[in-house]
Image (cartoon, rainbow, N blue to C red; front, side, top):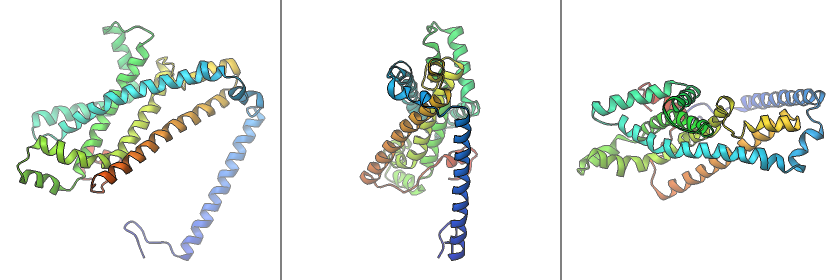
Length: 292
């Protein structure tokens, strides 16, 4: 028997796969042992570096929780703005009118080509030179501006890929009953494309959440990762703090993806989907003009 992508492994192949898996697990275990040994030699596993997270509530109430709230605030604002803006840009890229499609495509490709950190730095300089935004709020404004400009452009490509992944017959059927292009997009294509776009869209939302850390590194935003400096200065436990912060990021992102999986399941049950799913790779393919 064989699948679409590869032949089903036989007995010898299965045995080799088990050996490869065993060797990998052994090497992974050795690597973990080496890392823990190195940490122990540097006294990074001493109890006094880890117990403050359990015994001293100030480490949470003064540093970690406020930092997490700033991270969530920056990410939420960016998502709320980037999602509708990206949808508008994506619809613009699908326009039949060149005077709409070409300028929108230029904007999308321009902001996708610039690293998000540079957009944040440009945003910070813009707010310094041309606005009266207070200095204590400027890092948040700059981070949100950079995240919105970059991720709205990426979301536009996700939406375009999701719509173009639908069967051509959907558009033809809408035209046959006299629906205009806008009606076809709103009432036929977008509702069906939602479930196809959802995996790539959730992946991009996770990227937004993680990229808030760039603002803390260079712009002084008091987000979660930036709290590492204050905690380390007061408790002398840099490695332990970074591990705890990493676990917090994992927990928040897991909650986000779990909610998205639940929502996708509900959408697939409540609507008849085409079954097409758009991943991150398909988005880059769409940008180069290849079919999804």
